[in-house]
Length: 359
Ligand code: CP
Picture 1 (cartoon, protein in one colour):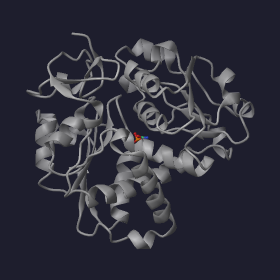
Picture 2: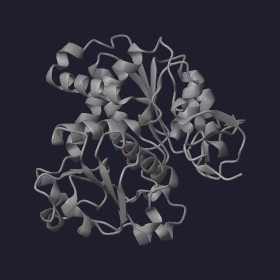
Picture 3: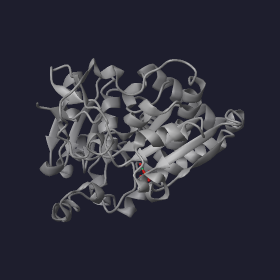
């Protein structure tokens, strides 16, 4: 059963095929209007969402299917203490495919391992958000005509920014890309995301200055400083206004630089930038729905065939270790056994959240 937990669960070839399907859906929606007749999508959203939940739901409805689900943990039996595993087993009796968002890192992998239907990770804490990356990839492809040879600036919360981590995993697979990582030191990339860049041999620069970096960029990927991920409210207050993309700063950028943002935004992009033709963040919303349509079609089509769900690419899996990440599913899920894999540098990493295990 193929599920998508990490963008690396989809090969480069599969991503190109999905982009072709998404572009065809955009041009010929009627051709696809009954492809999922009789099929049900369950949207299990344990964390707030506008775009990801509604675009998955719109995607299934536009394919002729129907939708069940909930939009908050308080509306599900998680509020009574039900585990992620039991939820996944239960919903597998009611639907054909699941899209799940959860605040805990690794929750989607645990759900996929217990579901008997395909599962789409719609965001697991600060870890991964592969379907946002599908939206980002199609947007970059449509705007730049290529996914290669680009200088990509990522700005804001690179530590907890799951969309950043997934986009890095995706863009390192195309030739000639370079990154500029722009963040306060406190919100720098986690070690597993830096590791992905090093492993792929992709050049990257780390800086705190958006002004100094913007003139050299082909893509600027802005992100929100995410209040909900901070343990210390004072730290959030200190960092929340770190960056603001304004009309003045846009004047320093290349005439064809594309500005992306997964949204929601708070104040990190001035509303005045929205009128600039280089602002692509609302195009991402549409592209996200089209790519989720392509993904639902693909996963339902392949549902009867063997596949993997999220970790076979990581390497051989072992039992043991203790994950130090307080936001890992290991801390919350009943009787979940700790597992780890060995990365290419010989380090032990938690199977669920990719955090380094030192014991
Ligand atoms: N980009 C994104 O994940 O938005 P939502 O939180 O509104 O789903």
